[in-house]
Length: 326
Image 1 (spheres, one colour):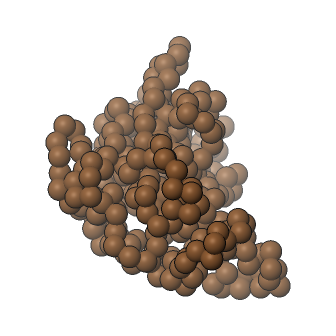
Image 2 (cartoon, one colour; image 1 turned 135 degrees about the vertical axis):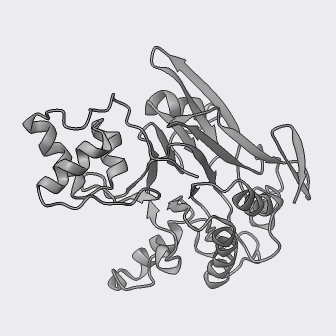
Image 3 (cartoon, one colour; image 1 turned 135 degrees about the horizontal axis):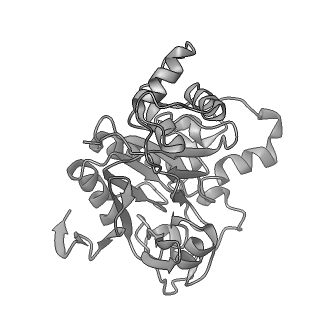
């Protein structure tokens, strides 16, 4: 069960005098954000925030678990406040019609058993094989857009059904996800803003964003840097712990400096690396990919060492030193 997030600054005691600037900041934030988020951003105690808002005729918002409303400054950035609990991050499912991968089956199992407070779908659930900018190879048999959307809907419904009812959800868009509306914007720009032309229109239970900031010091987004050391470079250049997908490689690399330790996490891929979606595309070459997803555990607002659930074979995964059949 998630408890209220503690602010990073020492909280003010109830009734302590606020400066005019501090009061204005609480009022500005409190008109848009839940109390938990105002606490985290200002360092003020809950009762101080409640009293300040009510004195100005503003009823405090009670959304204590879930995504905070997007800010005006960063409308495409999701914000999530987690005090204690698990956040699961999974990416690169590239769902096609057919049997689910072992990583997907494990994902559903862990969503039910770990009871996460939030789930971040970190891009490329949709593949878009038939609308790729790359030309077809040898008249390869690829699913239609409709078939892929239906496959995504089926698999994501399994995740939603497994998650606790109050768990927050968001979908950070990946480059393959963007194929859906990029193709439409290119060949049929006249249909702009018509319902159905955006991928998110077909997944109303999944709010979309470019990135998800957890407690403001953990950033989840589909991609940033590239190459073998991308996770470490993400954390180095991003200045925060960064959790990404895109490269399918599954690794956790710490970066430590005078600010402490932060992590670069590559969550691997939910798709089977040798699935039909990649056979012709990679010309049956070897691939440095691993089926996996990330489990982020927070304790009193602090991220513990990020963990990976990694596929071992077609029927089992490993996690915390155990083999688990799925």
